[in-house]
Length: 169
Image (cartoon, rainbow, N blue to C red; front, side):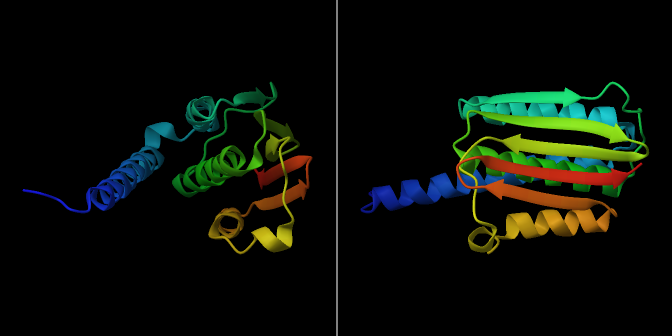
């Protein structure tokens, strides 16, 4: 069999391959989130750290995670685990894809009964008005609202972006 448009077929196969990989990763995330054995904040942070190191490493970026010592081994329900994971994953993915930063940092701390997760890059930053047309940042806000958390997005051109999630424990 001869294929006249070989490059179009290769492009289509590449798109199918990428979509299949993304679907597999999404299914794995869902299965992980619904497993009651993964209901601790510690396990969530461990999974995020592993995923982030893999992603940033593939992009030749550094990843640092700082977890406060006073953070309790808090239990999270399935909805909290899923939404916190997806918010952080989107923030890290955006930093890797758009920031042109050398490093992405994740800081997890606690004040009174409030957990704070910050995803920070020192990259290009963006102007909120021109970037909010995409679904990623809007989805992050909606996910935070679903779990009663607050999400703040701060970005300064040429200085970087900070995504901060605050949630009562």
